[in-house]
Length: 380
Image (cartoon, rainbow, N blue to C red; front, side, top):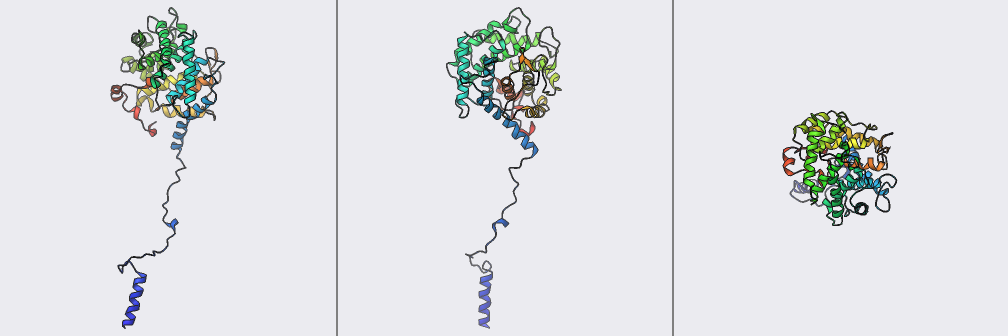
């Protein structure tokens, strides 16, 4: 009986070591596949996630295309307005946080800014008689100086600002060629007003700068619009796309809370993005200003716009990263340049906003546009 009990006890220790109070140094082998949790394949994106991935890839692909097509001297578009196209390309890179210190695009940006600054100085602060070219070049130099503070940019910027202040009409607007007695043009005025604001943000000490900005604001409030509806010239009827320009400019110049601004915001609310040739302005120009106006007006005016706008841009971006204007689209009597369209489409990619002029004061961030600057991806 004792012998029998001994064999039972030994068997118990062997078969149930845990219950017997002894450590089992040789646990049974278990197939590792049985313990592997079932995890979804993270490489498979939902349609919404795939859309966001493509949206965030748009500027990356566009900047690669711009870099690949830059001239050896740092400019772009040698056959059609190289100053303006180079300025827009510089703005596109800066808007995505790419500066001369950037690893991927530093040399590209450095050469472009240097070429633009030297060209401005060589022409004694006035680039051509086309104030779009001059204004956008001054805007680009001012943004560059704001961001990187390289001394050689400042004199070129100040020279450009002086020309704009001198060319402003008494009523606060701007005409083609900076003519004082000619009819004002809202589109040309817009680029000059953005350049003035950029110079102000950059800390420009040019005499008359603040006065010029105040005159510009009054021009927008009193002269260029009727009940919030803006027009391109004194002789044109008001239209929704001109109103988008006016809306953005009012916000930019500190008049975002004015009655005219609120009226204009309501007018542009229902506009849907269309990729078609413009009647008076190229598609990229119209879409850029509409995007700016909607974005800076707040969430209510933007949440219905961005999904349609971003999908439209995805549909028309080429595989190599650039955009072509719609067939028949012209600017200053010539086919709209792909550098022009590509740069403006990069500039119209919220919520990425690295240009100093796009940024607002902390007070306005808290009071007027608190939410739109902190939207999550899924809210666009």
